[in-house]
Length: 112
Ligand SMILES: [Cu+2]
Image (tube, rainbow, N blue to C red; front, side, top):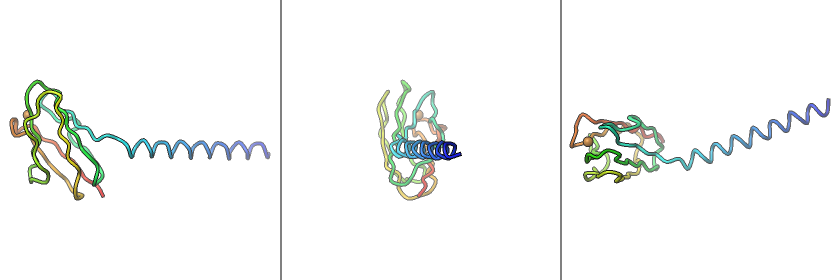
């Protein structure tokens, strides 16, 4: 019986270790939005306030990133493989589009 209890305690310990590892990986995640085939991918991204969001253009066409309500500075025209980064501000929903192709839209949800 003692051996069984010991085994359970060990299992709990390893579950705990796994949980903290996942937390570490999550806090260093990169918030990346790829622009490909005239679309933002993912189209909706959820981030925490203060985190950085980076767009990268994987198309041969130039694209821009412009906040509909001017909640962040707009990008210049991004050439192929060029990146644009903003820091997520106040919590809320930020919609943006490409001024070259206004049908291209995306959303960033900023949480506290
Ligand atoms: Cu575009």
